[in-house]
Image (cartoon, rainbow, N blue to C red; front, top):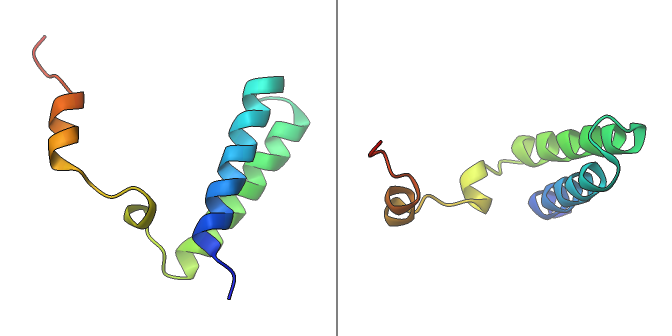
Length: 69
């Protein structure tokens, strides 16, 4: 069984690097962004959720978001 969550993460990293290198409107970046979306959909359909890769950290969330303006 393929590791969908790892494939989705790798696809997202490739797309982000391409967008940073050539710009988000470049055809290569758009193709890689579409591939990342497809990989993320496959991971979701396989039962993986965002929290599988990005668990919630209550202490970190409180320290990173200062609401005192």
